[in-house]
Image (tube, rainbow, N blue to C red; front, side, top):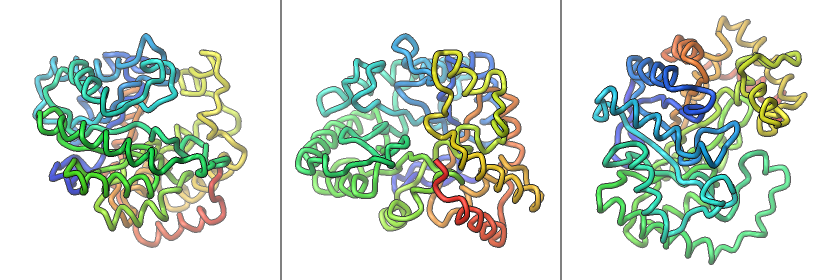
Length: 353
C-alpha cells in the first residue's frame, strides 16, 4: 500500500487508516487483534482511536478501552515500530468522558500522559482534538447551526493556550504531530495562524465525516486543505454502514450498529443519518455500482481516494470478516468517467441527512 505524508509533518503513514471505535465494546479482543493483524498484513500501518472510544454507546466505565486494546495488541505482537497511532482528546460536553470537562492548556498534558499509558507507548504520532470547544456543525448540527454564538476573541485565546501546551508535549517527545477533528475552514486556518505566530505545532490533519452521502468538505475545507497542506482523515466513509446496503428496506441485521443501539435503549437512527432520502441515495449509488461492475463498499472507499485533495479514509469494521471484505477492494481505483457518474448521482441526491 502507498505511504503518504500527513500534512506537512514529515510523518509518513499508510494511504488508508484502520478505525478502532468499536474495540472493547462490539469488537472483543480476539476479533480486534485479528483486525489489526489483517490490516497490517495488507499494508495499513496507521491506526486511529480516541480517549472516548469505544462508542455505541459511550460509557464512563468503558472510556479508554479502545486505546487499551491497541496497547495490548502492541505488547503481544511487539510491533510498535511498524505502526503509526493517532488518538483524540474529547472536547467539552460529553458527560461520560471526564464529566464533560473537555480540554485546555492546563489539562491536555495530563490527558496525553493518560493516553500514552493506555496505549503502552512512549510517543503518539498524531494527537487530535475530537471536536472544537466553541462548538461544531458536525454530527447533523449543520441544520440549525448558529455561528453567531462564537466568541472569536475567546476562541483565539484558547487556541494560543493549547498551542503552548501542545508544543511542550512535542518538545518532551510525547507527540509528533497535531490534528483537529470536526472542525471548520475558519477554525483550521486560525489554528494554523496561531501556531505560526507562537512557533507551535502546525495542524497536520483534520478528521471530519466524509462519504458519498456527506460531502460538506468539498468546498471551503477542500480549498483550505490544498492551500495549507492539511490532510483529511475521513471518518464514516461508508456512512455508518448505510453504504453497505445492509439497512435497506427496513433491515436491522443482528449485531449491527443499529441493533446494538436499540438494544441499549437508543433510537437506532445512526446519529441522525437514517432518513428516507438517505435510503434513496444508497439505492441510487447501488444501482450505479451494479452498472459499473463495482461492489458498493469498494466503490465508496475508492471514491474517497480519488478526490482532488489529500484524503486518508478511515475504514472501520465490527468484525474481521467485514474488514476482509473492505480490504478485498482497497487497491481498486475509479476512472475519471466513473467519478463523473458518481457526481451525477450526488447532484440528484445531495445532503440526504
